[in-house]
Amino acid sequence: MGDGPILKLVQPPGPATESPPPPATRGGPRGKRADQRAKRILSIGGGKGGIGKSLISANLAIALARRGKRVVLIDADLGGANLHTTLGLDLPRRTLSDFILRKVERLEDVVSPTGIENLGLVSGALDNLEAATPKHAQKVRLLRHVQALDVDYAILDLGAGTHTNVLDFFLISDHGILALIPEPTAVENAYRFVKAAFWRRVRNVSQVFGYEALLRGVMDGASFRSPVELVATVVERDPEAGANLAHQLAAFRPRLVVNQVRSPQDAEMGHAVVAAWRKYFGLEMEFLGAIDYDDEMWRAVRHRRPLLIERPDAPAGRAFERIAERLLLADAAGLAADPA
Amino acid sequence: MKRLSDQTLYEIIEISADAPKEEVERACDRAAATYGAGSLATYTLASAEETALLSSRIEEARAVLLDPGARARYDERIGVRPATPSPEPDRPPGPTLVPTPARAPWPLPEAEPTTDQPRPISPGLPVVAQSSPPVEPGAAATAGPPQTPLAGLAPAPPAASAPSTAPAPAPIPLTVPAAPGPIALTRTVAPILLDREVVAPGELTVPDGSAWTGEMLRRVRESRGITVQQMAERTRITRHHLENIEQDRFTALPAPVYLRGIIVSLARELRLDGQKVARSYLDRMGAGTDGQPGR
Image 1 (cartoon, helix red, strand yellow):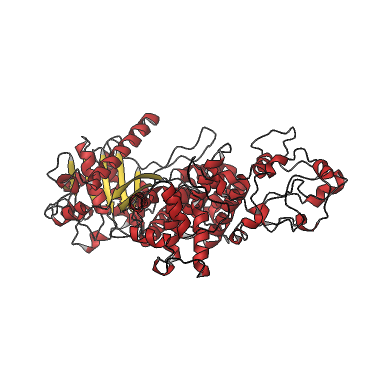
Image 2 (cartoon, one colour; image 1 turned 45 degrees about the horizontal axis):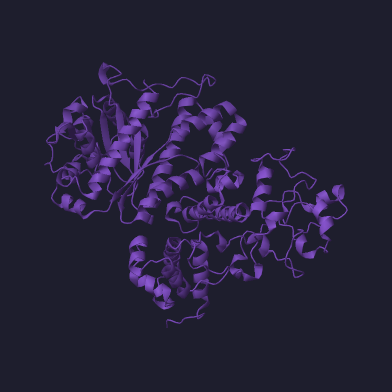
């Protein structure tokens, strides 16, 4: 099985850059039409556990479904899945393990109804250890099927940590959402996660464009704390490769959600992280919004009911609505700019 | 994507080069809060060296950009305002513009709290001002290189330009108002003034450079017509803390690391310079006993 990179590439800047053509891995499984794919893949990660990734995934999914989008929520927290509980469902009969172990052919076959219109769930609750740690080929197959889902949004709830499985799901997404709570532990893990994802993208880009030797030469004996330094050094050796690298890396643009906000200062945290990321790492992040710390939230969790179903008017519920709106706006703008 | 050390002071504090003074000030405060040591947003993202570098550049921005004369020279040097005919990146050898009037708003140095002292004196700062012989104003006006160099602002040491130009090589600022005493370095680094505060008519004004006591904070608050309760609601600082701050009950206050943020928000709500008030207050508190009427 080829350990080829799983990567979303952006168009090289302008006609000037004659880069080797990216090996498009877009085709759907089993001869499906390539254009039949989830319009947008959204993943929620953040490094640390217990920061609300599942709740954010579930409530964003509901908010989007209620706006008439067809949404499938995929519990990609293999080994720690509990999205069905968040949604108040019993353990679905079919789960991701049936797909990973090829008991069923298509990902569609394991999509369970949620009782919410336009929203389906792929549960990741796996009893099978082999399925919980999929091999590379299994992961690639899963990613291809996610891309090929005939829905408007596929939302991946990622596990904690910085395992390459988690990072690859994050990198393949149109919107990689970084979840954070205003605590040093979460901040630390978030930066570790997002840096790990970034350097994996560097590796992927270099594999795809054949920059490995170049990068190895550049990185040999030097350690680069930030992309700024790396790109600057590459440009010195190979301006064209440097320009393309900068372009590919600039496409790495996580979207930040700050959860469990208890004060206006906490809410400002989102802007501060975006600014600090730009200042020290030289890359962009987009602050999608803050979610209030809300007792209604844990009450809803206790009742095994999604907040947006129980109390859409609660502060946290309204925050989810705002974030969903912002995502839709970003996508509308993106579609207008890039009708492909 | 530019390295921190390559960014202009405007890029460092993230404003445009034509931003007014008030905006510069706000941006400095914001940058210090966002990127400074102890900021949650930079935790584990930046190394200690990076944080130190950025902090010193923010202070440099504060010192340079809030001083109209220094700012004009800086702008000229980085070429954002090509007012002079020669757009060389380095300072032109001839003292083409000596922004004399800009000297006026210097604060009285001796009134400045000494804590301002260790701020951005760059290693390259020429110390000529202290040692050079007095020069008669006329000569200095025509020949002296531009004013007292500020941190990071003096790529060409004055000595280098001296031979080519001038009868009077001494780069003493010509309008030094206060006299013979050591031309204090604090002057070049202490443009943080209370006069930047917006003082509405009828409101209490605060003398420059005074040390901030709880009593003064209380008076300012009362002069602004804000009750403790209102202040607590606006700043989300508890009444308890507010009262302890105003009564200088140092031992009852939270640790300095928290207190700094509390005082900064309190001072901002009073439209004071948050950083400065916090520094002054914490210094006094660190010193221990200085004026504790409340105890």
